Image (cartoon, rainbow, N blue to C red):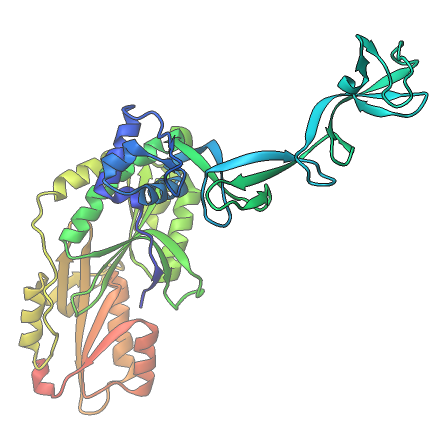
Length: 453
């Protein structure tokens, strides 16, 4: 049984968001730029997008972030906003403070040092009568490098007299009067957003072929999951992520389609490695109906491997052809009819109501060339796959033996049937039951042998 742990619904599939992406793809919006607005808690707004999507600043910001995470947009630094850590106000006044005593009574200028007495101070302190006179010893400073030297441009605190190359920044909140350091401030980086050009081909595919395929699957009664984290509980027990997983459970036998998407880099066709990785995941999850959508296409080697592994591979041209062909197929929503079995006739009627084409005593040729007669063959064509179910009927006076179940499974294997079911009376032996479980054969017991006729 396929267990879906989690699935991801891309924000890019929202109708309004699709219109935003299209506007950026065709150049109507070159870049989504914020406008600073200190009256807002966020400090910045995106008026153009907010109006287009009809959503708040917070919602739009979240959408832009998620589009970035989906690699559809790229975020560009726009500004760094500072907020009061107490009241979140942006109405702040910066002040420069002495790092030693915290006083704001500081000045900035060139600093002199008098060699004779060691006095140092701002240049303005040494100016008197148009000459440089040491304010400490009163001597005239005539020659730079001989009488005095310049220590460069620094800050001097008039409160404690300390010199420093850097001052401390403190912020004063004009709303709540809190004074705080730069490190204590709440900081938010604001971004502008542009289209990620490397995703342009993906977007053309995603908003076109992929969307049409998902819509078709839903019309055929499938439940569709994107970016589905799946653990079958079988195989290696590993968790895999499938681009698309489609499930259709009519109450009789679940149908599962695994769909992979491979986008070539720089317009190159995808190679064997991509096909192998997808096939390995599907095999480990026990998924037999597999589709690989390749953009723009596949290498010859990759296509040959996909064919051998029974993967339905589609390039962009083939996708267009297929979607055009199946677009006119009627919608077939699920009919939730409880499955109850009392006789063979009820089973056949149930299958037909659910859209299956049914053949009794069907003559089928296996891959070995042998011809078999199968009790019931049920076919369901969803436009993508012809799902085939083989239903065998086994009855005996005593329990059904392993040999009979094995013989049925051998026929189904030679025909290439994955979905197998047995109607049995009275029951399977313990060995036969274990074998049926191992071979993934569904078993339904009849209440009487007559009901199987």
